[in-house]
Length: 333
Image 1 (cartoon, rainbow, N blue to C red):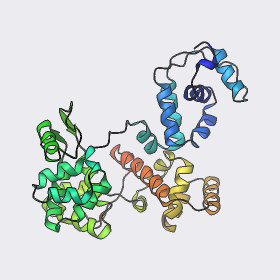
Image 2 (cartoon, rainbow, N blue to C red):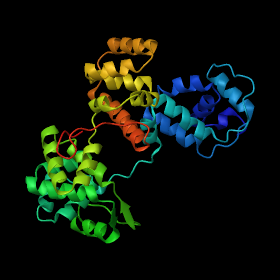
Image 3 (cartoon, one colour):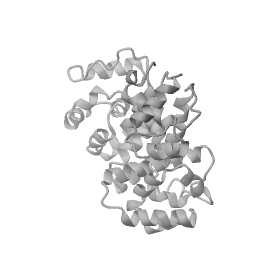
Image 4 (cartoon, helix red, strand yellow):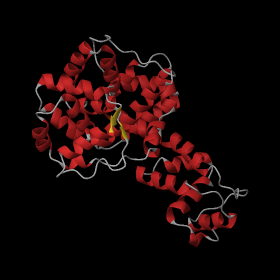
């Protein structure tokens, strides 16, 4: 890169960001949208070195003062961006942004009623494979219209899916040959997280229906029922984090994200969060919650889900313990 005019917008932003003090860069990043963070991530790919005068020129363009000693080598800038993104946005949201999005399935183009008609005479295993290819909202529309016994059988098989042979995908393609694009091109095996797919369906069926289905699944397969219950973890269940685990969780979550997530939280959960922050941090968080205006419910749920993902990951890493009630036959979370 010879001068700043040769640098596109995303790389200019990246060069400016990684040349700032980390605390400042973290604050800047916390205000960016997910699409902007992905653009920075892509800009960091393959960026190894740049002349210092280019960075100076970029700082001047942004009406900033360039600190002395900016290194000419930018090797590792992608790792640096990933680290400060984790601090600014929380590890759950950052991991989601750094993950390459999966191409949407052509099956999603078909109306739920049409697919339900086509699937009504299919075996539960075939239906489970089809549902795994759909968006959770569409899959839940289909499964909620099935008889209760069929719902259980399909959910059992959906939860157990891990991979699907190519010939099965091809059979599905043939079944929907006029409505579906080439689903099987260059596919040898399709990896599927059946638990996540099943949980995504259950979360959209309402507490009473989903709890009943999980209980029925648990009666037939206790281990699978426990995995589904864990995947159904809800934000209020953060109350069940034992000991100082809540402090470990709060260290991984950005303040902005936490503030939005607590918008609809119970007073009990808010008090638990406040009690595990320093008095100064707790006061600031309370003030931000009181001054916060209306927030879209979708944004609150997104923030809560991101924090839940962090909590579940910390439990998998054995850094926190989340108490659960009742084993196979009690409360489900």
